[in-house]
Every structure is written in structure tokens, then in C-alpha cells.
Image (cartoon, rainbow, N blue to C red; front, side, top):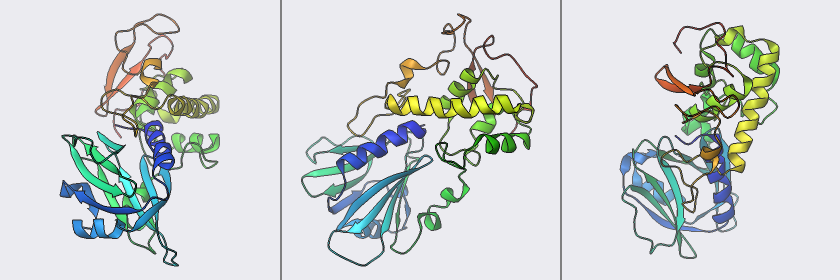
Length: 293
């Protein structure tokens, strides 16, 4: 599943490629990809004749501010996208052969189109009408915690949140109400660099451990962005290029390989239905929490 660095990579690519170009039409190839409005014709009609002023990222959501291509006092509308497990966005000429799992096409002036490709079909798109906030339509936005690069995500915030919840720290990091955008890959990486075992009871972490964890979350996310994201299975950027972070990972996806620091074999366990990769030497066990959300 694309996480914050992958979504940020796509967001930057969209801002470089698609801004201020008029959408001249489109086609919905899989109805359930569109979460709002329920009429597919209304979705395309709402976007046609509009231009993208700016793409934003909120957690793992992509939000495009849509404005009229002609001068207008009408409030901006919004286009929302969530890639979920296998969603991809490609900016291609219309003559490019159609991908097998293409779900939505948006045609732009200048002979280019934006395609939403999604093998598992869990991804979603929303059109938010003028005068409405994205969170009024995309309700998942209301349940997101702070972005890890904002001042709201402070050491004090991390320590306070974790102290109130008896759960494995790996499970806590995947809670989007705690921090928006962190998923399985970067949670494993941050815990390794913090020297914290994934089963450690989050409520037992010291302020020093919270300080280190806070810094390592930001570090691995920045490194992921700088590497263009991680390609474990399906992730590609807007031009179809793989991310490079996977080859730099400390523990994620490296079960059975040797730790880059101590040469111990990397292990993997299951926590709340998700895998957790760790080094048993660099991440000694602390107080163990019950394996539940």
C-alpha cells in the first residue's frame, strides 16, 4: 500500500505535470472507483471545463483544488484520490495503450490524460462540489491525526498519545488517528532506528524513547520521499518509475537477511494481522503489550 512518501512523490509529480491545464472530459471504466457523486456522468461533468490549481497531500490522500478555466468568482471544487493498496496515477498521451486495470481516465487539453489504474479496485476518487470542504464529502479526512511534518506532531504529542494506550508500538504507529500517512514499511524502519521492539507496550516508552521515535519517524519518511518512495509490489510514480527506498531498507522486507548493523538475521512476526520486521539484537524486547488494536 502506498504510504506517505509514495503519495508525496505522486503529489509532486502531479504538481509538476498537470497544473492550469483544462480538463476536457473523461471516462469512468469502473463505477465503484467513484465514491462521490453516485452518478458517474455528474463526476465527469463536474470536472469538465475546470483546471487544477494545486495538488495537496493529507496523510495518504491526494486533494486537487479545482478552479474554473475561465475567470470566475465560484468557489473552488476539489478532486480527491486515495490510492489504497494498488492504485496508481499515470500522466500519458491518449495514444498510450490502455492498461488492463485502468479505472478512470481524465482528458486534458494539450493531448495528455491522467489515468487511475488499480488492480485490486480498492482505490477511490471523489468530486467535491464548489463551496464544500473536502472533509464534508471525504469523511476519512476527519479521522486523521497530525501530519508528521507539522508542529502538531511534537514529542509531547507523541509521548501523551502513546502513554494512554496499552498496545504494541507497531500497532500504534499504524493508527492513522495517531499520525497520518505512516504505514507498515516506515513504521518498521522507524522502530529499528529507534531500537524499539515492535511488540513493546506503547504506554511504557520513556520520554527519551519517544523523542528518538519522533525523530526517526520524520527521518525515514524524508528519506523515503528523497528516494521516490518504495516499490515493494505495484508502486510507480507518475511516469511509471519505481521508487528506490526498498533497496535501502533497514529491516522491512528483509526477513532472513542479515542486519546491516550487527549481522543478526532479521525476523518477521505478525501483529494485529500485519507483518513486523525487526532485528532481535538491535531491538531488544521491552514490556510486551497484548496483540490487539
